[in-house]
Image (cartoon, rainbow, N blue to C red; front, side):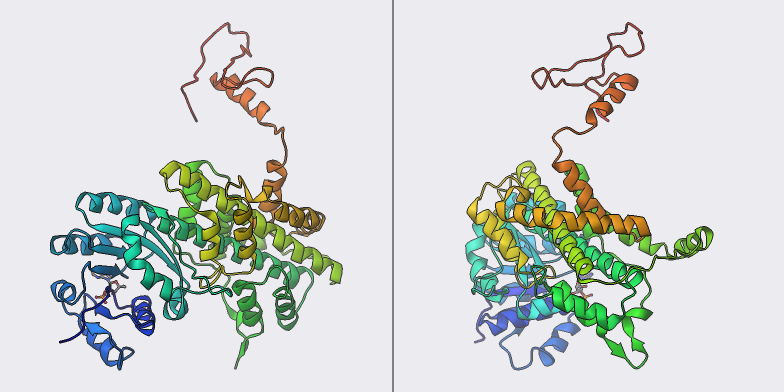
Length: 483
Ligand code: 2AM
């Protein structure tokens, strides 16, 4: 008789297939199922040939081939399809069985599904899986959240297949309850947007202002990859810039219009919902939006005239400033991302472990970098760290980088190189480190035109005052009115 499966995976697109092969490599018996069942045979006769992978041709067939408690991982299109599969699984599952959603689901959907399935006694886990096809095959970063009771049964599989840090730790830990896993994956993607945009801004600065060629640019990124900036994204940037085919450098033929699948946008929307100044990621999403307006930009450049960048010679001091600017902005971006996760953890009652999150991102995913080790170390030193910017190590990096950042941002503004992410990082920092902002004037304006009231510096917070700015003698205030 055929051995029973440890876990089933539904969905045989590339991510699903690669995760199955990865599980198989680690000694787990996997049952593979797909809506279009011809893909099951294609898989068994193709990539899965010679493995212990078991095919299934219906949900019933799949469930009958699993050990109990049964574990079914969905690797299908996010959205309604996940709900459809859950609906068809529910009547056939027993209490204690586990459904895992490994797709790119919105965390609010995961939150909802956890609640629904809890009532039915079925465990539900929503897990972020990052690292693309390569990661899925050889070790992704995995961010599971949902019903913790189910964690012990899936932990051995997840820990085995996840990426490993240089110290051998698995880049997979329990994230938190409800939609926490998918939320953290969403923030990961938002941070990815920021990291990419910052690299692109440095590229444009060096290409347009310093007039460096692709080989030179590639060499600089290779160099930076030996510094604190060491990361997958810097490494692939160096490779991309020097890549040539028969027609020459590929980078120079690619249309400057960025696509997006929406996770950066979700991160920005959530930050607005929770009132967190996630400025760098938001600017990075908007930078993609402005890039998408290619025709309008062509028109606008004709209308205002092409920029004539002043001759700016390359120097090691300037390159050092740029490297320091990237590092500074990266610190701000991660600090903002952590601010969002901290707020979400409180709002949604998740109890996130911030050091573990850095560990999960250390390898396997797109933002993997040595930088994340420093974040893990900061939260290990101080698990209650209020903000990454209050850590002494990051403070020393920020203080060292600041003069460089101011010079680069000034240069960009002076010469007309758009650097929205870098500039927003500096603006955020300058606001964040200013005890007295001009919001006193803002409150006065609100009180003037809308009687919104204000608190006072010289009185206990929580008491609200209104001034009769125009001598109307009216005592009306609209303290219950929030705009
Ligand atoms: P398919 O091969 O039968 O299309 C990624 O697209 C995965 O999601 C595939 O396994 C795909 O199955 C599945 N999928 C996409 N839309 C689906 C739907 N409406 N119902 C079931 N599975 C779907």
